[in-house]
Image (spheres, rainbow, N blue to C red):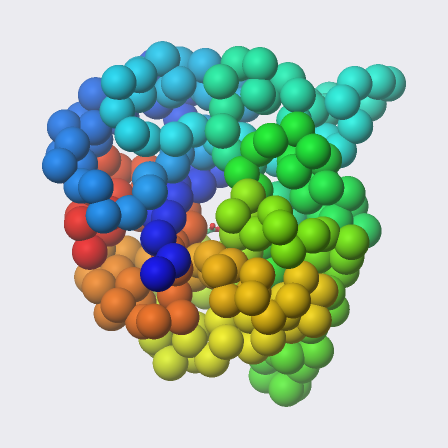
Length: 249
Ligand code: PGA
């Protein structure tokens, strides 16, 4: 049985004060929820406030990005080692917004995953096709390329230290959700592609999250799919009640 992870990607939202206020309202709502793992991903500057606020709960805190080197002349970057030393446990790698707006490549995603594993952050590696790619029948080719590149030289022994998030770009922030069937098919395909890199046994343990307009109204249908091992939630994770409702799917 793969344990699900329900993750809140706050993107460029929430100051430290706003992050504290979120946790104050959210934590009591999910205090009795032990079924799935829960993690919050604030912007870098709000990570310490969030970590302080979740103390004593089982909510994990992570970053939305990292650099693969431990330190060096990389203006504007933050390393996995730095995140760990302030108490971060998770990191998102290769989100489609980073690929689209900040030109992050498949090679960079692989380096970041290797860096996260080396330093001990639980990584969520994002993959997913654009609308035009799906329309032109290129979905499988895109997922094959992204998964193959991300998992290059990654050992199956590390499978419990990372997840993949399938986030079709056409479903992110658009209100258009992949149907449970579309998501399940993509997840099964991703698992088969992952098996080529990390082996069948490890791939059967790999957690594959779904992301793209997950909301309280569709969380149950998506999360009850055998192939869907959690959710990466953007917009609907900004409100404590709405994210708590998703956690309680
Ligand atoms: P969304 O974002 O839930 O607002 O669609 C998901 C994500 O980008 O991780």
